[in-house]
Structure formats: C-alpha cells, structure tokens
Image (cartoon, rainbow, N blue to C red; front, side, top):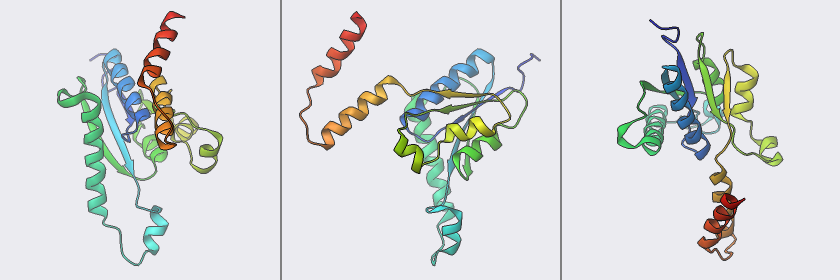
Length: 183
C-alpha cells in the first residue's frame, strides 16, 4: 500500500455556493493525493438542542435527519450530476454544529479538512459564527479554507439589484468579464 493509503479528504457540505466550491476543491485534492472523500453535512434541531428540549412539542428528529440526507444528496447531485465526483467517496449526515461536526469527523492521521471560507462582513461575523474559523482553531489536522468563487459576489450583487427593483442589464455582467480579460 502507498503512503496515502487510508488518507481522507473531509469536506463540509451545506449546499451553499461556498460549500460547492469547497466540494470541488476537495475532489481535486482527493484525486491528487489518491485519497477518499468524506462529504459531511451537519444539521441541528430548529432553535438548537436546548430550545428543542424545552419545546412543548418535540421536533421530528427522524424527519429532520432524512431532510438533511436529502440536502446532502442534492448538493452532490448539483456539484457533479449523476456521474458523481469520480473519486471514492462517502456521505455522512451528522447532528450538531457544523464546525464541531467537521472537526470530530476529521480525526485521523493524514486527514485534510476542506471548508468554504465564504465572504463575510463584520455584521455577519458578529451574529453568526464562522465554521471555517472554528475548524482552523480546533482541528487536529491540516485545514484548507477555500475562498469563495468570484462569481459569488457578482451573483449577490445581481440579487441585491433585483431585490431593490433596480434595472439590470445582463450585458453589464459579460462586459465586466471582457474588461477583466483584456487587463
């Protein structure tokens, strides 16, 4: 067996654009390193564990777990179609916060943890913890934080313009790309 036998690339998948970019990067790393891919989707009860315990009506845990599994399969299908990633892989649905679940899954010697770093402003950082930051601070293995695709910010801009009902000319998007290529 080679020196990479049993090596795994663990990647966090949520279905977001950032996680799909990370998923593609993880597949590339698995190909280069002759490693197996472990795609992990973490899910939590609505309102968190404490709120769920105090709720009058219990959360439908089995239904939520199945929905998380469907989300993982949907993300894999979105990223790779029916052909799959082209490397040996396994999907895993884990109950818990994303950062903690990923760090606990990437627990073997030789593991590489791949997460989407997402573009986050100060407001979002203040009110929503970053999975990438958690993984970088707590993982016992190397962590690859994949920056968002440049297309993600362009898409966000288009969504803002649509939301504000501002005029949108698709030629502006392609003209901007042409100008970048010329420079």
